[in-house]
Structures are given as C-alpha cells and as structure tokens.
Image 1 (cartoon, rainbow, N blue to C red):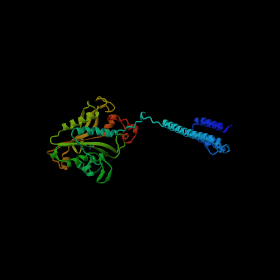
Image 2 (cartoon, rainbow, N blue to C red):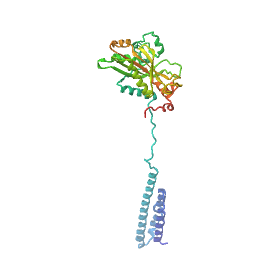
Image 3 (cartoon, rainbow, N blue to C red):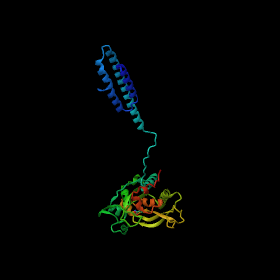
Image 4 (cartoon, rainbow, N blue to C red):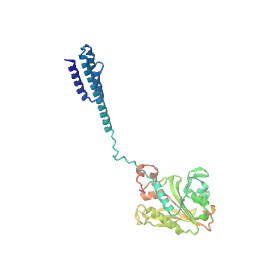
Length: 348
Ligand code: PHE
C-alpha cells in the first residue's frame, strides 16, 4: 500500500477509535499506540527517509497534518471525558435543600419548675417580690428566729442534715421570713414577698416524702392585715393551681411562727367535693400551712407587733404536682427519667 493511503487509513482508524473512548485511561492508551515513540504514525514518519525527494514533502505534510488532527481530537476528547465526569459527580452530590429537615427535640422545664414559675407569675402580678434564699442556712435563722428555740419539741418534725452544730441544710423556707423582715424598710411600704427554693429533711421511708423537696414561702406584713386577707390570697392561689371552681377551708393547726395557725384544704379537683380516692373520701385536700405572723417573730426582727402584723404561708410544689397529675411517688420527680418528665407541659 502506498504510504499516503496507509497514513489516511491510520488517521481514519485512530479517529473512529478515539470517538468512542469513554475513559482517560483508554484515551492515553490510544495516544501511545498512534503518537507514542513506537506509535503507528511515528513509525510512518520514521520511514520517510526512504522516500524520494519529491514524495518526502508531500507525505511529510500529510503526516504532520494527521498528527496535528489526532492531537487536537485527543485534547477535545479529554475535555469531553473530564466534563462528563464532573457533571456526573455534581449530579450525584446534589443536595435537595427543599427536603424537610429533622426537627430538633424540644425540651421543657421540669414539672416542679413549671409549677413554681406559675406560682411566681401569680404573686408577681399581685405585687409581691421574689426573694431567693440559701439552702445552707444558720440554725439561728432556720429555727430560733422563727420562734423555735433550742430544745423546742417542734424541731423534731424537721430533723435535718447538720453541717456544723450551727449550720444546716434548711428544713423549710421560713428562715426567709426573718431575713426579709429584718431588711425591710416599712417607711417605703408593706412587705409582700414569696421565696421559692429547695429544702431538706431527714428521709422518711415513704413514697410521698423525699430528703430534698421544694417549698414556696409567702409573707405579707403591713398595718391592718387580717385573716381575711390571708384567706383571699390563698383562695386566689388555689383557683389558679386547681381551677376556678375550687374553694378552700381553714382548719386550726400549730406552727411556732404563726398564731393562729391553719392548715389549708382545697375542695377536691377530681370529684368536686363529693369524695373520691384522691381526697380519700373527704372532699378536701390539704395543700399548705399558714397563719398570722407570731408577734415574737416580728419582735426578733426589730418590727413592732403593736403597729405591724400580717400573715405567712408555706406550700409544697412537689405535693401540688403530685395531686394535680396523680403522681403517687415523689421520687419520680428526681429520677430524671425523660419518659416520665416529658409528660408535663403546663405551658405551650
Ligand atoms: N414552714 C412550715 C413547714 O415547713 C410551713 C409554714 C410556713 C407554715 C409559713 C406557716 C407559715 O411546715
């Protein structure tokens, strides 16, 4: 075959092979087999030395032309394969930003915190201030300043964790009565406060008591405060916590820091007062202790009981939560079992 025809045939074969190549690797192999050192075109060019002087430039020109064409076709094809590979990757890695995301789980305050905040909101709305006290308290404020001197038998009920003989984990929030009273400037107006927080007592072996629980103390001191004010305040609280149709009743009781003292019952929110298992058939549920502030407590805080007087109350948010939600074991509140805690959504 004439060299010219041979070149044309090689060019056509190479061109059609390159056209169907689909990988860079195949493309490189083709380049080597045509244009490499031992490639077919290179071989042809090498054979030129045997040609006549007339033929040489003609074949030479054709060979160069074929080489340039193939080089160009290889470059274009390389570009095509690279673009295809890139497009394929882009298509595979597409991110659909319109897909719905996974919702983060929304938590909520602990049920006791929710109840405390609800009560705080109520009293803030009635012009009370919220006082925070310390859980580590002096025996002096926890007991003596609320009229429970050393050896007073009522201390027994509140036996607790002592840190030193003078310092303890407070057994109730009542020390805040004395601490707030002694700070209060009555020339600026009446004292109206609540003080929520944790309190501690020796563990008793039953499901409704815990060595740590919560209380909210309340106190109002001014001129001319009566027991009717106390009853009205507690009725407002009971309605807020247990529903508008609730009533309360006061029963005589004893606390060293109030005189007279009362135990406060709310009409049963479950049966409305006819008697059921929640109210143990009585129609009433005990919710807190209260009373008119004892003159001694005022005196010890430097307040004249001839001029000033008022009331105090102490309630347990844990007990309110148990009653409200029918929880029969107080320890459920403190075990941090999410399945239990998740059930309580007082607010939205
Ligand atoms: N501190 C009392 C208790 O823990 C409750 C109470 C507070 C009673 C204020 C009367 C007035 O039992």
